[in-house]
Image 1 (cartoon, one colour):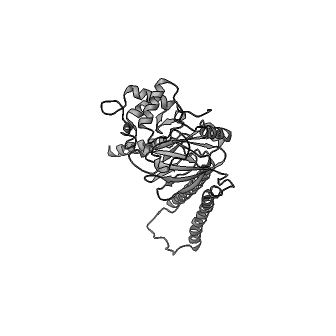
Image 2 (cartoon, rainbow, N blue to C red):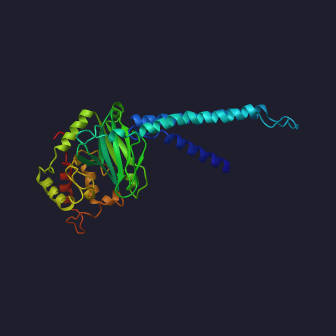
Image 3 (cartoon, rainbow, N blue to C red):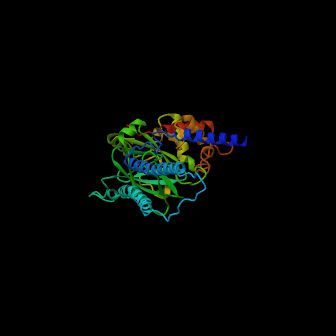
Length: 363
């Protein structure tokens, strides 16, 4: 019975492993590369896996051949020999060759993917011809600054497809790690130095996932580490340029158009404006950027990176952010008219309507 129970447990784990091995959406899977970097890394992974499986298969075949052919048939002790020089050479040379087969493309890809020279070259205007994005990781949200375009946004990274996008990575509090699984491997964001790399997003693969990929923090950074997500909108260059123009056209905070939204704007100006910006200009000092930029909040894919972009989910987040992202810095920072300083239902409705109206696309 004990042996039967062990076999049942082993079978259960085998079935679970088989099922879980197929998990992963195209916009969040390293096994479905959607760009040049991801494809290079995927090809290296396939090559190394093929080499390992090949070695295991050959060794297993030799083992069974020896086990059957040279099985002891009597009590005679076979002739003892020191060894075969030919075999010694073979099993020494073959591993060396396999290492070279794996090392050469790995080293080549490493130098290729580490080349960020285009983001260092300045033109006569003092800007770069390449698209550069400064990524700043915070507990538990992401900021994206486009220095050439002079705009800042948060949580939704917008990039053009079929061209290299260069990144400067840094953290404002603790170590994080910037990772877009479908586009390429992760890279740490540190507080004391800037890491640099580039990614490319394939237009056809982007269209297959409605132009939205998912990004994550890949370094344990606190209670809400698993909830530190962001979205990547990979769109054709013309659509990206239009988005940039729309963002640059916002010079002043957008004004509310209804009485309820105006009430929400007043609440925002009293409780939220000290941390959140509602204009995309990058003139705000970094030390003052304490919370996500909300210029185009009404156009985002998610709320706080994890909730659906609906009015009800926004009200839930505003009412109790600690419930959805433990240890976040927003909890307790605003005051309402409730008995304990919480926002009342009317204040939640007003603030929600104002925030949902923060849109710049096609402005």
